[in-house]
Image 1: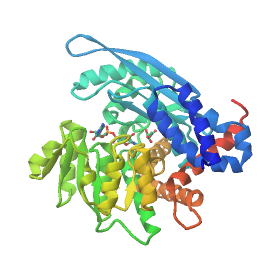
Image 2 (image 1 turned 180 degrees about the vertical axis):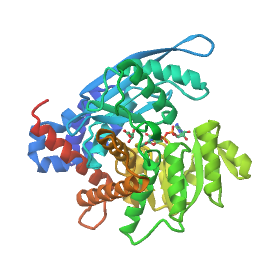
Image 3 (image 1 turned 45 degrees about the vertical axis):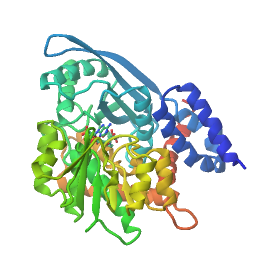
Image 4 (image 1 turned 90 degrees about the vertical axis):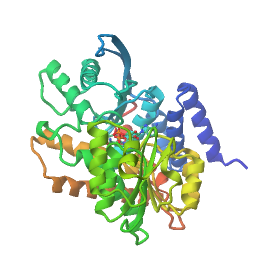
Length: 450
Ligand SMILES: NC(=O)C1=CN([C@@H]2O[C@H](COP(=O)(O)OP(=O)(O)OC[C@H]3O[C@@H](n4cnc5c(N)ncnc54)[C@H](O)[C@@H]3O)[C@@H](O)[C@H]2O)C=CC1
Ligand SMILES: O=C(O)CCC(=O)C(=O)O
């Protein structure tokens, strides 16, 4: 028999799908949240009457714009820029910019929607936003990237500000791109202010921001493991990706006594059974952040296996940290991971597991930390960067790291509070969704029907 709550979820989703046609990642992100929230909303009718969820699935503002720039051959190139200002109930819009050829409206709306819940979970006053472009930085010269960033910011600058909307990095946007965009904002507005986070340390950035997402995902895994009197020490870890989040996840796993055996990029996976140590990690950082090469070069340098065109999930591990991109763990990958003994998943990436994969993790009762909780450390330290900018001061590495650890602990506690069922099992998906929702929903109700 069909459950009445399923009917309500389906009715809600039919409207979302009709209004946002073809935006499959957005539908996926909304459905997961609506499934978690429907029982809670039915029990708390004030949220139902004020149509909070209906309003939260409609962005407050969507900005789309042309970005023209000139490549090294003197040819004009045209890309599309976006900023989704999703929800400002609890603070200025906040969230990263993604530069990747797959970027489209649906992907950015899913990311902005997730971001609103994630930012609420951090306990800091940040609304949700996300943006980016279908520009592909791969294979472009520094000058081309700079010209693109300058053109992108020439439009974006009129929509952002330290109390309005504060973008940061995401896939394809790191320190280099943030620098070029910050410089252009300053040039146009004649103003030095905290309009981006992830800035260089010498010009307003925060210590630990580059490390924060990866470190946070590992802290979150550790918090989950502590509920079973377990720890990272001695565990084998599979990590996907080899960018910002993956690199600092490796660093923190090494520090906590675990062994990372995989990394990947969009071409394939390296498998290093001896583990990636500090020296090998330095090589990866140089390879990816400076030379901008492929992870296959690691396999050649250290004579380890390279799994061309494959993801890391067939490799035996205790802990998996997906740190590349959305939907990178499908149902077969999830079954393989669980069959091979993996019992902790902490998502460094946003929505890396398909809904069917998530079902496998939940049914297996393993420790599964969804991205909006597990990877919130990055935006949390962005929030701390905003605070330091507003106060015109700089906190030490130890101070920022200590605050990050407290925030990840608090997020974990919130998930347990709202996600623990009568058997004692913690459903972190439900916990994160309800925990993130309440603060935004109450603020939206208090601020009237806007
Ligand atoms: N940078 C940050 O502070 C935060 C990032 N995230 C998420 O973490 C994930 C990784 O982001 P970053 O490390 O910042 O980006 P990055 O650009 O530094 O690295 C991205 C990595 O993912 C790999 N990748 C990208 N698309 C892929 C695909 N289709 N298949 C396989 N691998 C692919 C790239 O090769 C690269 O290794 C993304 O899902 C992002 O949204 C989440 C929270 C904060
Ligand atoms: O630091 C930020 O503002 C955003 C980080 C981000 O894009 C994310 O949490 O997915």
